[in-house]
Image 1 (cartoon, rainbow, N blue to C red):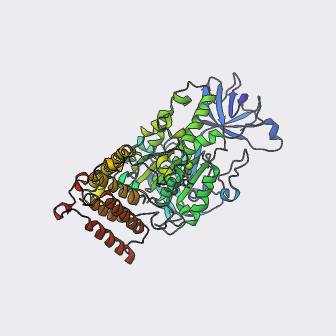
Image 2: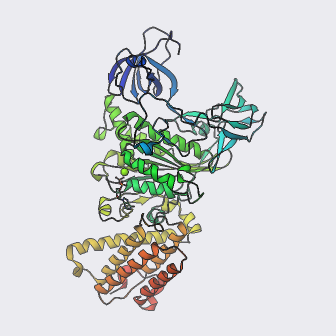
Image 3: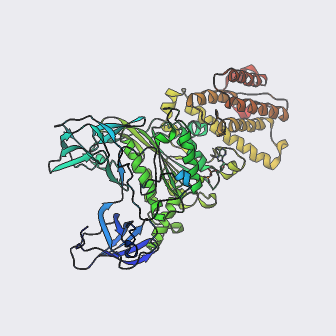
Length: 619
Ligand code: ADP
Ligand code: MG
């Protein structure tokens, strides 16, 4: 920026919100919404503190309101401002995996050691390591034509083949005028393009405005297309994969009151989900939680590759100690990084914990701008903003015919666990799966505390064909039957609360016991047991089919005590089974004992076909 150029100046400061004014009558560059600016506090310029980064939220004639991503301590009226002419953007290129960034994509090294010490104010660090060299292999040659998002070549990034793309904002086709293989840093030129309107030099990194979906230009030019999600995202959590599956490329919301286990569940999913890349957006939760994740992940190995789990993970983190504006941007930063890896034909999972904190950041900013508030003082655009975020998930077919997916899961932490509040409600209207955690189940230590009676998923039907082909024919119907049993068991339980055990029939009591067995040995899963913590789909299939057989069968018991004793024993056997390596000798023994015990109490042989309705069976 040349000194002579007319620059806006600060005319008002209100917490992290500053009002800028351009000098009248001079040829200044127009200020635009979402443009990144830098404020130069005059008082600090002397001791060399760098400029403070911010973003314009609203333009009104020659005035604009901007939010500053850091503390505005020391900023005063008259301070000069630089316009960048650019939107808030992230750097995309090799070297994102395994890294921890804040919401502005500034690297947070050693966070785990320093327990949440963040960067000093005004420090801008490159997101991608500037000195590291990557061995670039070209897949196109001089004279070839490429469009936006086409592969130019690739580098090896850990276990993945990291594609180097022609610029995503390329306006039409361009001719490759030169391309060079070898070891380069992310900022060194690797190719030249003739766009027809001029020459453009390309390096391995490119930047993209976070608030714009990465494939926007590609959609417009029909270079990518949306594909219907039809494969489940295997989390190895039984309750999710069997009962409330989420498709790869789908969306899910995990609401739950404080302490219900959202973060633990998110971390389990991050660890075990069968995806290539995981982006964890930790917005506004306690620093301690992020530190836990950061210290755990590098220790764990990815069952798919044998490498450290951190190698496939990117963490974007902001804790409540960081300024609100940086928190608000973190979800977009995480999504854009996720979209970038999806464009390589990879399966990506983005998990945001918690989106409530993110929405609160939006509310605070909106409040400062004195916008007309909607419900509970959230801005009126809360609903459309949440929708737009979840719309960035999906399966895409790339220009190279590969399928990449981005699955988005967000936790919501409504105050007091009240799901009627605006953030939960807007999220529920935007997602296709709802995994609702209940404090009741968490209190009883029924983990994961997903409440099967309130949760739902639209993917159960959408994935029916996949489950029929890859699990067993009729899988979805059997799952529905078992979900119904849980409801029936709950009805009996409520009845018993009023009338006591004596007040219900033996048949109803058996229904209750059956539902309880299913809950205890299938829905609940022990995150601290090395075997039970992660149950692959083929093992889920085996246990589910066995349970389905046992639970749709008729039994004869002498008394309620007899039924209770038998089911308690079955729970013990199944619990042991769940913590035993599959196909071990012990595993076989336990299966046998389960079958024997169930057979001993089976009703007359005619009813053993598995067709008998549980409620009418025993009496
Ligand atoms: P939230 O994020 O909803 O506030 P957390 O995920 O931090 O809640 O969980 C709170 C506590 O509950 C954990 O510290 C842990 O003790 C317990 N917990 C949660 N999920 C599980 C689980 N799957 N297995 C065992 N304990 C759990
Ligand atoms: Mg949490």
